[in-house]
Length: 155
Image (cartoon, rainbow, N blue to C red; front, side):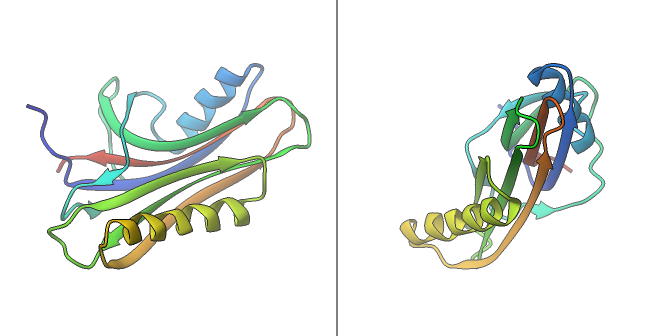
């Protein structure tokens, strides 16, 4: 059985590369998760999980993560990605993670993902204590990518 994560960290990064995958890889490196194997998760924060900073992940490790990403090869284009976490009033209930990316400014992307958290709590009939979000915007030079994520881990 896989242990349930009890901590999380919000991360973000951007990158420019020759090809979209290289730009994405640079965005992962800038976010601090580039030397790991990302295991994309559906978007639930386990009950009682605490937010941390400075998380050190094992190189090559299988890392549970919820993320938003977008890439573009159109010079001058704006791309943005954001992640938001909803914290429930009741710490025995799970929280919600929402991800969103678009070819729009960060202000739009981040406000959209924050509203998605509010909506997720509303249809779960769960009281929302707080919304935490993090996003990144990038103007493409040649081939750009942005990445915003909630890394789930264990202490």
